[in-house]
Length: 100
Length: 166
Image 1 (cartoon, each protein chain N blue to C red):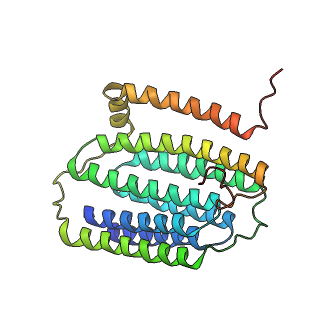
Image 2: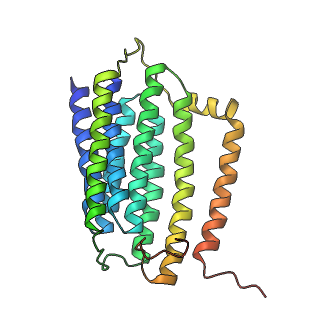
Image 3: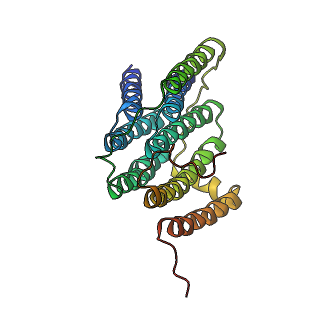
């Protein structure tokens, strides 16, 4: 069996890559994909600890995270379509209506 | 031994394709790389003795969610729009900050987290997950179904050109 630490390290690397994508990109859909990457890194951590401690709760949590990621993707992409209809771009710097 | 080879091979695939997602300018290439990264993560789930969730990862994430992303990218015709780079200070803070965060996390994990592997394997197949889901987690399960319904309605309202009220 592969040690749990290695899965945790892989998960940490993927999470850092996701953070980097959110901070450095302007395209809304790419930012969204970076968020999905972070969600998946956290899922990997949940499963690693579920195996480590013989707990089923981690697996159930991954199931719920997947369902909520699906809902989030549907609503978020609908927001981007709506933004594109109004502004002709999905550059997140252009969406400044609610910015002070 | 073969287990370790599989782990390192697919870990490398997951990390490389994740880097392609955040570095490539074209969002279609990014979405397809994300699918590859999710497949590699499904292999990780199999290595963690969770075959049911590996199947869900392939079907729900790589199948449904990423198809939704690709659909929206093609619907908005984003392949031709060139994305401007962000401000240099934002680039620097983003890369340096996330690199420092990642290195600190990896350092902490490899130095201080000591976990003894359990003696017996813990195989969570569909039956185990299903029984837990419909017994102790029945209320959150129903809440998630209502949330998905709300997401469907919200997506329809947001992406339509406004409901005509007569």
